[in-house]
Length: 285
Ligand SMILES: [Zn+2]
Image 1 (cartoon, rainbow, N blue to C red):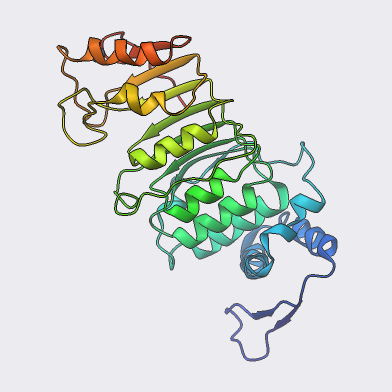
Image 2: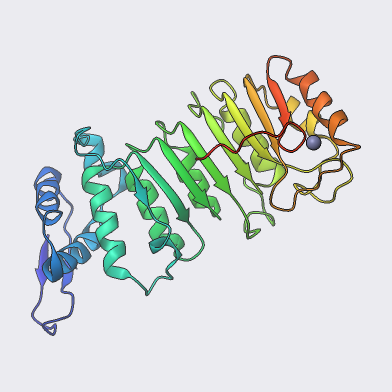
């Protein structure tokens, strides 16, 4: 890797020419040094490093060859503000975040919004994959979903789809040799995609919070006439299902008990509750 600063103004980023990273450990060490800098030098360094990182195939990232030490791993990362920025905004912060995730790994990320700068979020997800255990993600595109689906260490996910981006062509997620999700809260995922996700994690999933309305309430997921059939085809072994009626989901009290009973019949080992009727306490992600 080398930098060409010859044709650049003082305050502009240099061009980065990245040869095949033959010595990834050297690059990783360099990135660790960058991560300790502050101020404008750090901004420039992170910006350059982000270019370099983007050119390294995911399978070559150092977390595979040299997993971040547990003590170094970022425990929690809130991307609420930066992930809402469109591609030409907050570039330095995005570069710094990507570099830090790449160098240290991260255990938990929340408020990861995919629709404003999908390419950057996808890069962050891919670099976080080796260490990520908990993820709160909003408005994913298919590529984001596939990246999340491939994360072997993920145990806890809150997934919200509010913008309908997946509705036209709902992706079917592939089967997994061993799904690992334990806890899932899902809002607005298309039916077919939801079924494939639940099937992939059927053996491990313990708790499911599902945003869904009652029969006759409207289109999925605002209403659902066949929730028992939908969940019955997923092979679930969950111990608990909460039917969450928030976010404009319908809730007809006359129809709710029959829906809950029907779900109990297909999941006899599970505690099945309606969030409203059973006054279920909200569980924070
Ligand atoms: Zn109810």
